Image 1 (tube, rainbow, N blue to C red):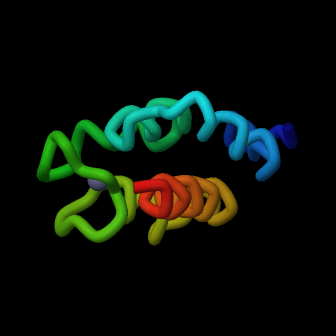
Image 2: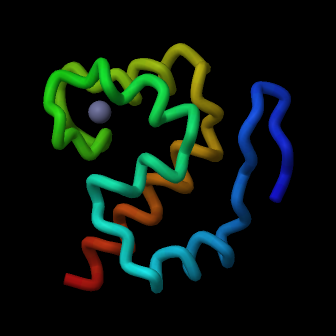
Length: 86
Ligand SMILES: [Zn+2]
């Protein structure tokens, strides 16, 4: 775990994979990313997965640099892994 200046941690990929084994539902995954959880209530869709949805507050925060790039990329890679398992 690497502390970030803005708070929160970058979770190393192996740890993330282990989290994936626990089988977190897609819609709950963002709850493990506190900075995403903070903004996700502003997403247009309450079941937003913050990947391709329009008017996604998480993507917006990422584009503005509020959410660190490695954090969002970790999130996307977990999402991609989940999809591969189905
Ligand atoms: Zn979203």
